[in-house]
Length: 501
Image 1 (cartoon, rainbow, N blue to C red):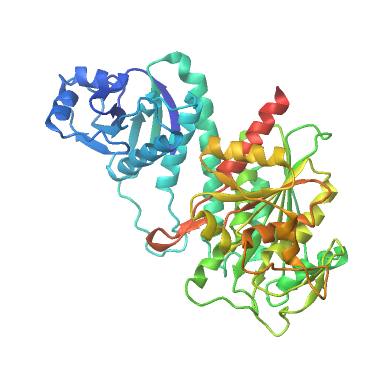
Image 2 (cartoon, rainbow, N blue to C red):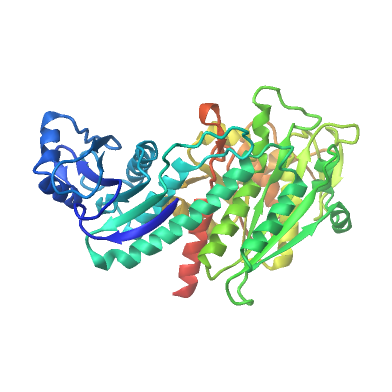
């Protein structure tokens, strides 16, 4: 879908559908007011009759409006009673509007939702969120279907509009930002949605090379199992032992700033299918374990967005990629492995494999002399229990970095929630036979998993994002979400703006 910016009055711009807002009980936005006057009072008449619902996120589609209106349809979006909406409420109504536009039969639309006042948010942010909502609603994963039934008349062009020409610059910047993030989310969703037989560690490595062809500022290095053996990555390789698909360590580097600037390093868990290994999972919903590489997918998506935006930052993406399957060669509960750091790990549960591949990747990250390191992983079911499907779990060893991520989550709407990283939790990882166990018991599973990772991140500032609850949806809408690409891109944009000021 093509997103652009247009300047002009709502009644004079030609389109298949013009989108305006009305607040309760009968407060028309400037664009809605112009349409009402041009249609000889049609909107106020419908309001009086109760045919327009002004509740927040409610929509009313008006066909063939009367009078001197150049649009074929009017879509009225309700804003509720608040004079200024919360960011979450705005996202709700932007998504509602996008859904109606996709099913309305119009191929081009004009949105004046930019007129809505949102608390502590500017015009560029509103444009970005409208673009993201429209892309997310329009996303389809059908590359494996033999009989693709695409919408007969999908929305192909969305123009964000304003009657004030001074708004053009901020609006174009918002559209460009939203488009880049949406493209990154689409990439992350597509990688996440691909089945495990088509998205193997080698396939992810090929995807990295394909991304390099699209963005010339990317450098890509692929390490095979022999390379990892030479580096002493015994923890990572202990997970791949049960699979016939060889593991890969994928390293992608983007240089948008001076070489002297220390990079941000993103480490994404890339378990392309997780059966649990010898500690095998229950069969119900095991197909969803193809989503266990969504942390890796978010690294790909964020690198894509950053490269498209040409952000003045240096960024490194590291993806340890493997399958976790049972086999005669597979790691067994009670085995002890040696990580790249030299620390030994007693593997009490082979289904706690994500931390085993991440710990070696986090040790490897130190060679880039990072400013900060952030790992992203669908790591624990405990995080879903604690935070549900709404917020990402956040822990770290540097409060400044944690605060930056919390702020980026609020700004982007891709929110996080901080959990404690205390020594009392770390003590749960004690082992009689190795330096540590790979699990800390049933209690506080998300926190003890982060405590495990923290033992490999003592030489730099680090944060951990547990995305187990937000990376995909189950049920009728089953599929990857593309989170936390908006969070990470916002974090990097804020850093770029700070460095430039």
